[in-house]
Image 1 (cartoon, rainbow, N blue to C red):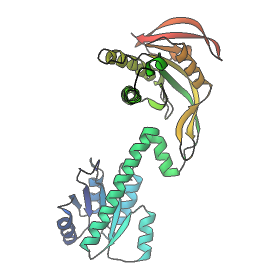
Image 2: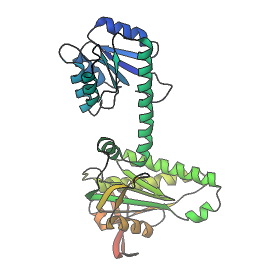
Image 3: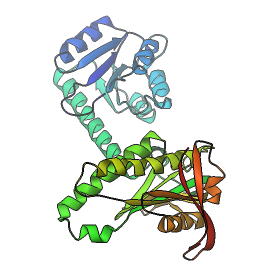
Image 4: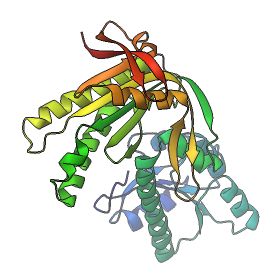
Length: 339
């Protein structure tokens, strides 16, 4: 599929007429990669292949499975629902156009084909598709994919309470002192490099990055779907972040050290804001996780009892005893490491 202007788009042309397939293939082959299908069933098979086509030209009147039925199936399939469909029809009737748009079609092209209209319509919808993908890529920086899908499909994402989650907070030791010695562009380059690595660590372990606030990094597991392994995966991610900084400090002039705190419990998750919205999690257990991070040690991961009791034998813990957490009173904490 298209990932940039340098890529050649793939079109799937579906028509039971060999003559129409030949006309369109000849017209488009120098501009795009063209695949053809003579039936609705074959069109579904090709559309579901990887990589999927970037756009489908779909005849309405076909024996067996007609174009409307094909469109309906494609729009119900998560892997093909976003492929633009331009209907090909010899029937210039309002009823056909209305039904086609209701089923999710993007446009109509009337037979016999006008070459310039065909090219212009295809280019328009491929450009729109490219812009949509760019927008989705930007959204994925801010929002989990599940939330994006809900916003696109329903226009909203209702808040939900998640009972079994783990929450991680991380910040840098001596951040204010270090920033006083760095030029602004250097500071932002450093944070971008480190937080990009943290995002990769999170993605590899199915951890959701919630947000960054200055030098603070917040992430969680178990908030998008039920996950009995949420504590193990988040602790693994926290330890990997420390290990990354250790290795990075061997080669970089700026030496970053972090503190990480993890707590397990329940949260309320949802979208905050309208024009400048963010996906966030709220609740007392979020506040506890933040306090645990403040009580942690440099380049260590501190956890609560609630997290400790969920961990597998892959980890060992060192008791810190009861530690006073601001606004929460005393709470037993532990440092965690790999076994």
